[in-house]
Amino acid sequence: MSTNTGQSQHQRITTALSRAEFESALRAKGTSYHIHHPFNVRLNTGQCAPAEVRTWIANRFYYQACIPRKDAAVMANMPDRAERRLWILRILDHDGHGDYEGDDAGGIESWIRLGEAAGLSRDTLTSLELVVPGVKFACDAYVNFARQVPWQEAVCSSLTEMFAPQIHKDRLASWPEHYPWIDPAGLSYFRSRIPLASRDVDHGLRVTLDYFKTAEQQQRALDILQFKLDILWCMLDAIELACAEANR
Ligand SMILES: O=C(O)c1cc(C(=O)O)c2c(n1)C(=O)C(=O)c1cc(C(=O)O)[nH]c1-2
View 1 (cartoon, rainbow, N blue to C red):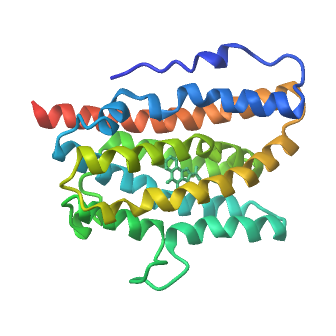
View 2: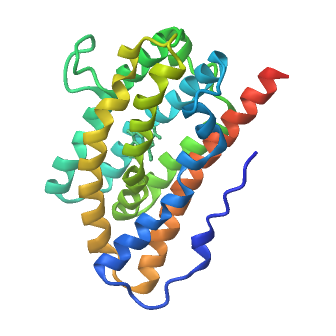
């Protein structure tokens, strides 16, 4: 298992940062993003066996399935109609704007098609039979956090999406070469998320920069972002361990 100590959390904020400085401090957290996790590095440099890629897809399915539940929890805490009108798009992105079968069936359906392209059946994915306890705990922690905190704090926790477009681009660039046994049509989830993540981040950053003003509040925002980075990191630790055990 790999260590990620979130070094920057030791440099505490003592004087309130300007808007630009605060945004830079949030973006600097990218050094702890799971893009740097050894399992992700192996995955995106073609070093995973087919069974390991499938283990990743099946476990990440649980995260995908949790995201709209998390977003519904955030929305339940939003008193403002204008904010809800923006936020509801996130739920529809995953659950689908269109019918179940069409091109606009949503991110969860796209992820199932990714699984099918990699040789996993719809039933295997949706039964969650391959999801390991560590991944379950990590994803459930995210949903529970969103239920319990002020909605602006939950919005802040979604800001790991600042770093997501690069990880999606890496997969699109490297998987067809390294994993030619996966039908490239199955990669459309990654393509679809690049513009959606940017839209989500525009909204999430506006809320976060408006809400967290004092040094103490800004430190809280950085700690929340670290908590979410840790969730993503823990998921890959658990997936890496599951792969190592399967290879034994
Ligand atoms: O593939 C990834 O590495 C990755 C990471 C993240 C993230 O950084 O939280 C999200 C996604 N994908 C994603 O597809 C997605 O829809 C998403 C929503 C959220 C969120 O916190 O609301 N994160 C992410």
